[in-house]
Length: 150
Image 1: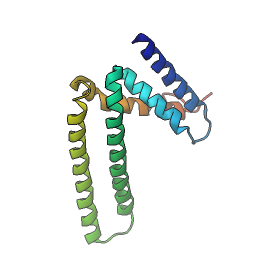
Image 2 (image 1 turned 120 degrees about the horizontal axis):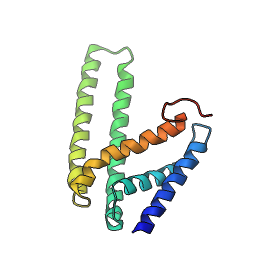
Image 3 (image 1 turned 90 degrees about the vertical axis):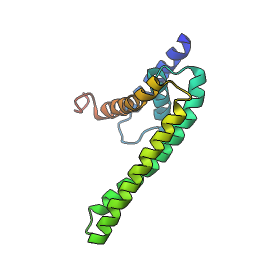
Image 4 (image 1 turned 180 degrees about the vertical axis):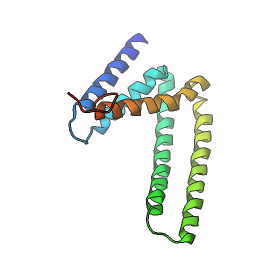
């Protein structure tokens, strides 16, 4: 077990190091995804049998959530344009509908995922995922303060 955690940690840091060294805004999606998998697996202390069931559920949930968030972003961009009163009301209702879908999907995901991992692990998931995103963003920006790299 220690060997698996050590390998995951190495993969995480190699992935983050490789991503951080790229000077352009382009990134290697495979390396970033491998780093994310290692980071979350390590932080949630997922056992191999948990990880095997966890990742397909998480990836499906994440894909669906991303699609819904893209719809919200499209509506938000449209709302910044000159629109009629009627269209504004439609956009508000569509946003509420998508937000409700997001909430319903999250509830379903939590029901599914707590059959695979403990509720303690499930509750940590959101924070761990945000922490990974924050670390990648900070590395890309050049450090904790977001300033340029030396």
